[in-house]
Image 1 (cartoon, rainbow, N blue to C red):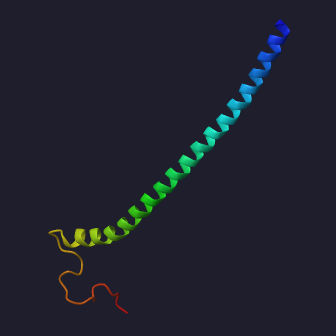
Image 2 (image 1 turned 30 degrees about the vertical axis):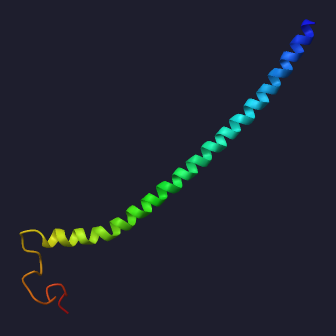
Image 3 (image 1 turned 180 degrees about the vertical axis):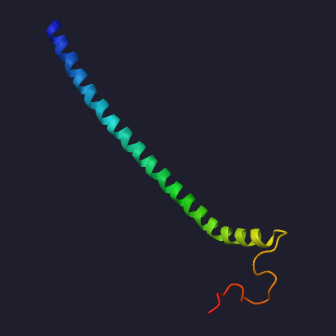
Length: 87
């Protein structure tokens, strides 16, 4: 009687261990899917920031140079002779 009870308990334990291992692998798969979705969202946001930076950076350089109260090289001449090296 006690042996039957022990055999039944060991069988139940093995069964529960299989269920737990399957649920653990399913949980890890769900975490992997969520992480992939988050990486896609991050890549999308970084792409938008790159486009925004590409647009804003040249404007920032231009306004930074010509917005100062100092002489910028070439500002006092009308043509681009100061930029072109003599030949």
